[in-house]
Length: 358
Image (cartoon, rainbow, N blue to C red; front, side, top):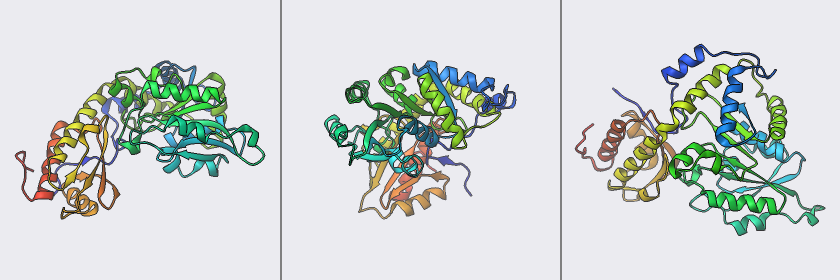
């Protein structure tokens, strides 16, 4: 019988804290579509301040946040956006920018650290003189942290370079900042500085920050005014949304400080796994709360069989292929959970429990 659960599938699996539930129960609310919900306005004002932007808008999800942002910048169908071939917008958001917005994606190869080479970005920008046959490039998108690269952080210097390139060509820059607070904590740089070069950003509140629902998009007053219309068009205009925003305010106030512990636990877990025969982890490259590991061919396990073994012991992981697994830490994973997880991995792969037991 499983006596504990250690859910390492994603940082989206966190449960609302008691403080969040209390805040939701007592939230002062009104109709947000009519722009009167006081708790939503409070959250949006605070997020605009933190990010150094003029305004902010609460949306139900990060996917909607990115979609709305891209559509505001690419308001003419047939526009083109330059983005990473391994980015969340391109891979995991149902192709919404194309199917809903008529925006054409032009991909550039992501490096292992989540960046794209500046010269390759510039080479992907269409010459406006070819508008008779080519889409018109209007936007560049970055992702910070970069999830598929193992939660890698984009530096201020790199982001500024991309911002300058965008300005040079008369383009806008959007940052998918789903985990921008993780990047801020890991780099020791304020969020507003990481987003300084961006015209807009989408920030998840339901990942590392642990709120139950929602994201916020930030940008200029005119950007947010257009975004609000698109949010309504896409079905994201909700009524007493302050109930959700109340939990998000608690998340911003209380959980940003916990991210450093998530990063530390991820490092400890990665280093521990790397010591177990049959697993290969680049522990030195772990920067935030996400990492991947590979199961070596000599192991008796595949990713699927290992996952099933772990699940029987209450440990949940995300499969990324026949021999590749993703691990994500969050604030509801304790140091004890990390040691328990290492013990289970040790027994699964070697048949011998480590000193922590299981």
